[in-house]
Length: 233
Image 1 (cartoon, helix red, strand yellow):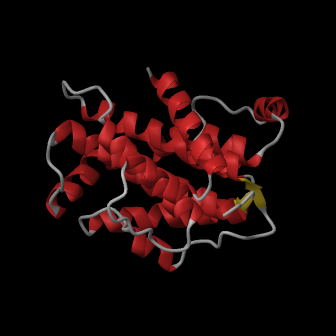
Image 2 (image 1 turned 90 degrees about the vertical axis):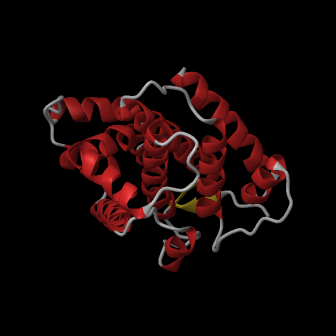
């Protein structure tokens, strides 16, 4: 199946969901190593522990990715930010609003953020089934290239996962490969599909190919994962 462009809103919503899944998976790997499933009270405690800094951490990861998603000329963006006197003291809300490029996308991102918070307050991360209930459509007139969409979700999830591990402040500081693979498969599923993908006895490569839909997307995903990993280490 060949998809060359994808709804910008779908990409942004997947990035938000991907951030939460990746950040709190990093926290779980660092604080509960070896535990496959956290209890609801443990998810709630992780949210409490991180709540004060969560929005600023969220924006620090998504800001550069949203800029590349929504603006074509980075030099123009840099000059515009200087003209607006953006600095380290600029609020996370203003930075996020600017990076989104439009009020409509900003409203969508903040609404998606709240959905993820509510899920954690219920003691879990948002399921794929719940995401697909009212997620943005794949097709829309406001599209971005699929290659850019894949890069965006990979970057957000890798950086958010690493941030989650680091913020836990434990002796664990490496990336758990199985978690990274799980996050990437989930990210591609929510990015390119209309419903959860069911796996049977596929090996890891076949799972990646299944969610990627075609060989071009699979190659983009592998390349972006490798590059994101190199940038982190």
